[in-house]
Image (cartoon, rainbow, N blue to C red):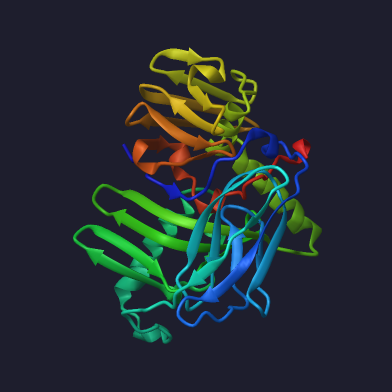
Length: 342
């Protein structure tokens, strides 16, 4: 059985914001150099897993408005500095102030600039990295890393780890997004074929005047969403899961799951959602010409998930089957909806 462990740093938010309620939340602050105290301009400050963000001005000041309510991870990223994050809980009509003090990056290696000087093994490691990060799906081949020479690999025994000097810029020409990923960790075990990675992605739509390309982006986004873990978990969180209506059939052990509350536990005070099931949940999907099968196993019988459709704690679950092939290539930004839901 192929087991995929994926850590994608995201956060929990309350269902009303997921449904698109009007909010006036905002964040503002200042970013400075940790050593000199001088303001830093052009720092990218964004909410991980979203299209929401801003850059600092000449005084190091940023402001982000029109944010839905919920819990987020705010990221400050700039080339030459270590990225920093801040866990943020935004309630309705709240104005948060978050300041960052960034430290300069110290590298123990020299930057690779000449392609001919790179060891052959680096290219092999890059291909492994892309395959595991993008996933084994129809859209992986249409994803391109624009700055691959900023990635360094370390191989010990059967494990390959990766680090990056600056955010990895990925262009997804299938879904129509440019994704800037702050890579915090990446470990791939060659023997067990398991991967664990932690990223903070920021999404920007690729603009085009080609109507056919735009239609293709929209069609592919819908295709990536339907039958995905994101669609399933979103429907469970919003309590609109209906057996087979959306194409899903779930079984816990041998018992058929017909209602969300059979496997979902909600902490209404903290706004948190949990899958709760001893052993494994079998997931089958058939709709819109797609047919897949997945097995989700919970190591402790319970694991937290984000209502936008992401499992949070990678060490608490394993996934095998079709959903294990999902990756950055099929990843959609938080708050994305099917066209008919907008």
